[in-house]
Image (cartoon, rainbow, N blue to C red):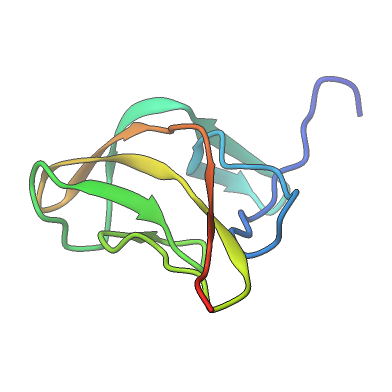
Amino acid sequence: MSGVYQVTKVDISTYGKYPAVGMITEKSTSTRCLVSVVAEVATSTTLIPERLYFIGFDSLITATPPVPAPSTRCALQVIGTALDAGKLLLHVHPQAFLRGGG
């Protein structure tokens, strides 16, 4: 289909996978969604205001930066900053790759 992009989950544990470029903020049908790049996003996760949030190994947002297992690597990517306990200011940063010790 022309003009329609395919969306998939981020996989921070697989080197070379596409990074996050936004977050699905609306899903109108099983095959159509709205991906926001910069936005205030309400979340069901309880957030800590003013804290940076990252993409976790489960592709969900987390306050804890991912740490790769020994002899592996993973992507570190900030997804946004908490404005309050239920709202994230979405501002996706470029990936950085971390290598586990060992």
